[in-house]
Image 1: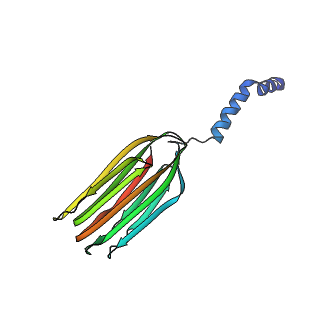
Image 2: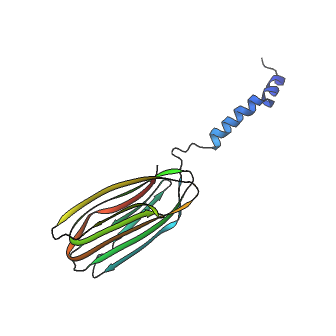
Image 3: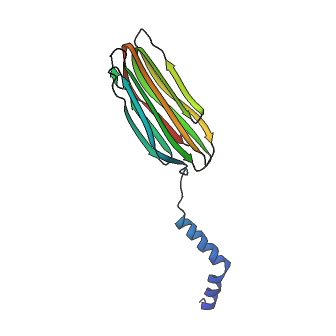
Length: 184
């Protein structure tokens, strides 16, 4: 049998404090797998413009603790001189030094249409491409990724520009443009 004095000495001792600290840490500080390092600052700012009967782009956004995405469906048109443009911005902050992945994917069929996009984080980390007019019908499929390590504590801004400009052909956005930013 253990005497009450012996229990009192154990409770008052360093061993008890160490056990209680470990239990408190396990209960009060939940494990966060992959540490939620991505913090959205404000809302997406989105501006769309259309000219000469172009369809209005359909834009959707999604944010989570490690991910932000923008999806743009440019629709389809055969209207001469139709033009559709989207400019979107999103501010975010990283709570830890983090590798971020910037991805862009889409598929479009077109003829006599210029398609261009540019994606950048601040003044660096760019994805950009331009598809010039073609007299023949062609389908393009893009799935590109870029990774970069960004430092913690700074507020960054991702900017996305997307433009379709039809001369006298058509475009058909088969699979919407999906831009995603992921903290890995």
